[in-house]
Image (cartoon, rainbow, N blue to C red):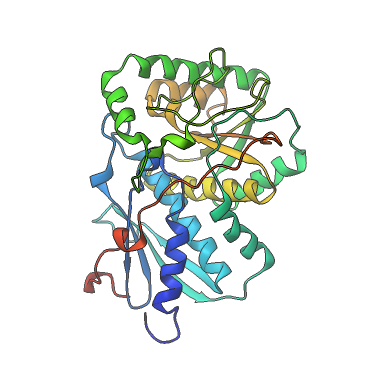
Amino acid sequence: MDHGLPDDNTVKTALGLAVRAPSVHNIQPWRWRIGDRSIHLYLDPARALPSTDPDQRDLVLSCGAALHHLRVALAALGWSAVVHRLPNPVDPNHLAAIEPVRHRQTQLDVALSAAISTRRTDRRHYSSGPISPGYLGLLTERAAAQGAIVQHAADRLREVLVTVIETAADRYAADPEYQFQSANWTGRRSTADGVTARNIPSVRPGDELPARASAAPQLTDGAQEPDFAELLVIGTSADDRLAQLRAGEAISAVLLTATNVGLATCLLTEPFEIPELRRKVRIGVLGSAAYPQAVLRIGWAPTSAARLPATARRAVDGVLDPYEAVCRR
């Protein structure tokens, strides 16, 4: 980058944290380009999941989470981010142009950046400890700052949501294309993408929330009690690509905030990959006031639970396009 802007090492350090963002099946559907005065985020259509995500909504959510991770990382390194979302009308895969501006980092910036490296997708059962209303309010505030809403699905709303999740699991269990896709992206052992077997617990009969089908689970879930996870639905007022990108940013903000206060989290998008079921949640849980984008399981991990290993990510150089004049700004 030009003099006065972050040096290349700073940019690559920030990108190294950005690529820790969660993505469906850990497919990491992003590409990055570094210009003279900006960093550019692109959706990589080569990593699409056509059988379950034909409109690429899950991919955009994933890229939105990576965008917010980058903003958090830059802030901790002393750079604020001016973001131009969907800057190129003729290229819908050009999701954002990010211009770094000098910034005095705060303790919160540093804490959220540290949460990037400690966050895990924890698919195990959570304990019965209640979540403080103050924490739930904080998560709602952090999502709102990114242009999304958080609906706590309790009581009747939870019943509606759980029924939808169960229905989705039943349908995918009978879908050979989905089963092939799941087998291809889960149960991995030494690759830089996909979900590793050591992070997947075995399905436990009688669970309220059926787990996403996975290959070769190896994680031991030592919890003896039922799962006490709370369910949060993240939604947006619109459902275009911009709204989905902002929803991904909100997902990142909620996940990092939850991690920072010690909560365990697990992101679910599977029930919304079937349009009919997504409409049911929009009507039955969100009262038609917003479009559901993701479900977040949240709670306290049992004190006896072992720390989960980090899921592998592709190296920054593997998702960084060569310097191109088209992206210089």
